[in-house]
Image (cartoon, rainbow, N blue to C red; front, side, top):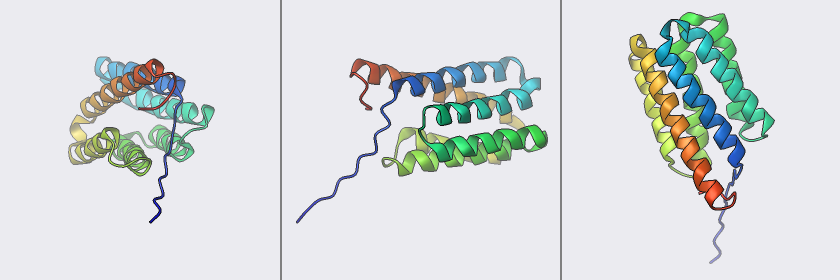
Length: 151
């Protein structure tokens, strides 16, 4: 009996650090200046998509990020739904690329919370961005310690 094993490896520590840093800065800005939520979140989504395109990883998630960012610029009253759309793409991408990952599950939970309570959208988005930033920087640190291999 033969076994088939497929491993999808995204061993780019620089992308993880860049995404983590952008997410942390955006999460803090969202908490400090909540009245600028439209501009901050749209800029985050577009910059996140550019990072995905620049490092040539997860092009579909990058495209979903850019589309959601442009959608927020055009329709600022639909921030909860556009950001939840991005989170759903992120969660399904994380889950499909290697099983049930913590990031995929948390992104899905945050998407449900954002859709369920749109009046607290800035706090929930800030909480997710801080979580995502810390998670990405922790992965970057682990990858750096292991010489560039994904953990």
